[in-house]
Length: 390
Picture 1: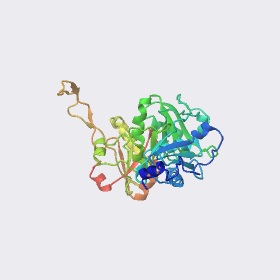
Picture 2 (picture 1 turned 30 degrees about the vertical axis):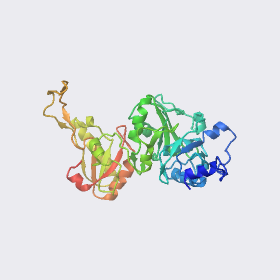
Picture 3 (picture 1 turned 90 degrees about the vertical axis):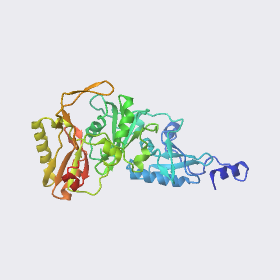
Picture 4 (picture 1 turned 60 degrees about the vertical axis):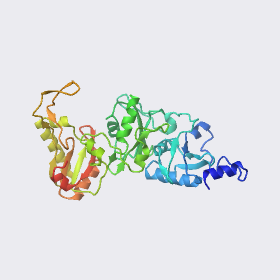
């Protein structure tokens, strides 16, 4: 039966009118209407004829797959379906799981993209309702992130990352106004996700687009506006359906990424060569003495995980036309820079004698800090490395 046939039969009286599927919505965890609304999500565009328990099972599975459940058991309690208008409401057990689930906006179910939003009568709650631990952070960053249009959800964080490391990654794009890294109060272990807001709200979309899909170790980040499920410039369903979003990191050739020649998130089969990104910037490599110090530091660190066969750190090349003024077609004049950024500048390549050592290095170094930058890693084809196709 199609939706139009169902509505026609209902209008003619051949089927009883039913606004919501009966028996699908469980009791609220408490009697407060505002509290209940903070734990509900509107879902539009649901497949016709789908049952409430199917919706519950689908989202419980996705929440567990992405590590968004705050504890054992299922985060989705119940589903209420409006058959006539093809939408549903999901009820979650906690406010924070509800907010995290908004990252699934645009996810495909039975061939149809779903639209996830807060209910229209949703009233933003205080940070204490989200279960955030009290405390204070340095640098004038508020420890509680209130619900607003610029509140950002960051999911899929590896447990080994500290508060400072996550903040350092986020502050690549600008000054933070507030930041909360959620932890289990009993064990003080990370729950794998955080919330933040930038001082400049205009940064929100830029940060989400760059960070969403970033590979950190064995995990991939889910980064999106959180509070009201608003869409960012990059649709979150891209990440859910494994279409990567390119981060703006030193060492990535944006043109090669755009043409598909380079996929920064495709870890592929482990090899003997490890590429370290976001570890250095071209300015670090200008001075010969500083370059040698960096080379020695990296070799010493990587030798802890196995025998290092070679290290390659591409440097900017001196420009023979440095200082020359060139007049462009539009009449503007530009001066040639002192250095030219060649292939691979901003990356570090480390070749180990065997794959096992390289894997150990990748597992340990991913997410580590080097000169106050969070390291991102990737395996590199050995033949490409020796051909200097960096």
